[in-house]
Image 1 (cartoon, rainbow, N blue to C red):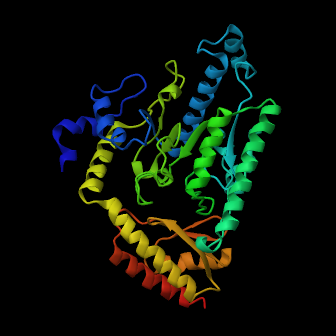
Image 2: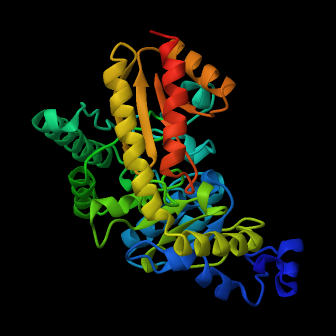
Image 3: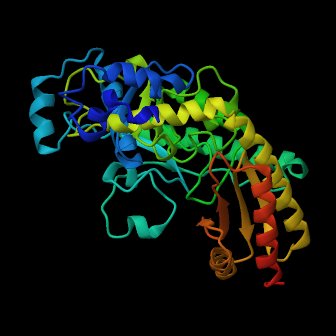
Length: 387
């Protein structure tokens, strides 16, 4: 394999501290890997490791950008420099980030303040007084609830604007809005492209950075490399964070969110060049084998199969939904959900739970239509035991 060429072995066995000692060829390797799939409007990428540190540093970038915008320049005052050392304003400003109920953005301190999926993540840990907006709860089938779902999304958008105004009046202005294209951990909750386009406009209107968290949705499993591409926008975000399927972590951002000084966005490793080598090879395979088209085909077969099982087992299954193979279905209760997960595992199928009572499906990009049929037959056998 090309990945084992002698010229690349050094990258695989050495891990530099990228913030101060990046390899000479690091910009070239970033261009071949992460920047080759950069979201629309994104000209820069900051590498990190996991999803949490990607989001944590993206939040810092939004705060820094917001304060420089407030100052009208990027030169802190002596008071800024002294008060930040004792965790006081104005050096440590009382800014906030608006997030959504059901969202999951990580478990570090800043990220945890925007995570609202499970109490076990948050219990006993101090947090920030930041605004939390409702995420739309859509009714399915979508085509039968067009009016109701539009009203639900409008309600949530109105609440977003109200919260931004309220927190500004509290002296805790919203520097950024963070949202997942699909709330994965929170229950595979979807919203329409119109909802996200309107939310983007609200961020513009109120001077907030717009952060799209693609840690779980990025990498192609929705049928597009980035789930936000389904929104059909030329300017979808100011920051897009990633990890998981990208093999490394980090965030893309616009020029204006570039930190103005060294060490403001920093840690020891700031990513791992070896993962960029691996990612470049993964991207080559995705392109060569047209895997995003494969995902659309297998995803359609998977969702149609879930619709059929839902009709066959209406007392157990409901709300089948998905984009590409990034699919989920609700189970009648948590106990039944857990039983189905265990019995599927015993038959060789690994499924995941999310939300209160959902099962999520996360096959690899090489999952083909014939794999779908194998799975559906097994899942049908498992469901038949719960009739």
